[in-house]
Length: 210
Image (cartoon, rainbow, N blue to C red; front, top):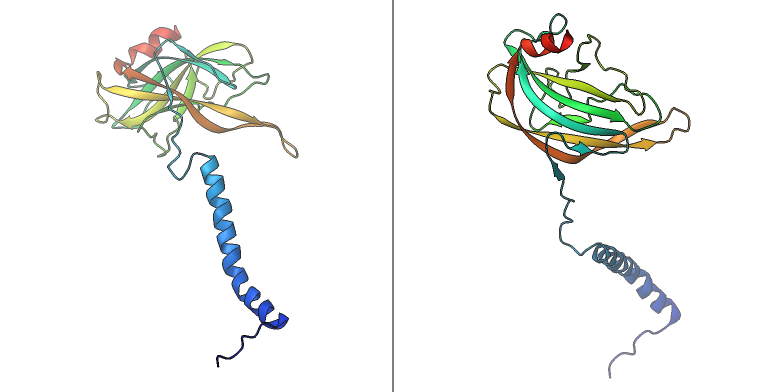
């Protein structure tokens, strides 16, 4: 005669306690899968495509409106800026309007060139100048359109006239400060602009500065 099973409360409680971790894990997995399904399933979420813009087209942003004008190689911006020996400047000229309500002087990460790093090894430009001025990082006043040139020092053999580059235009988000001042942060690419690189030697800066 088979032995009677132990169905006492203590026996049942012990079985439930042993099964609890597995039940919790299954429940957690169900919750996670449900959340993933709500966002489009287990497939990789596709990034929103970046808009394409052309030279002369305004790319509107929350911080700056940016119009990329052209790109060219230069041997210097006399009498103040010269690249290191063996280098040239890759220059991107842009018309920018500060659409915020406060002045700003940091725009090096609002315009980048795909695959190009400056002399410091970062993607940001080495210098940002206003044509005809020697000061770097010109102050951009609210509501005023200003023509600036972003300069990257690159080896003289890296780019040639006629080569094509892609310029990334980025926008930022205003972070309200609590203990510190408000700041523009989290740059995100909003448009790409394809340009054919020209070559202006030393003439360009000299002509426009006069």
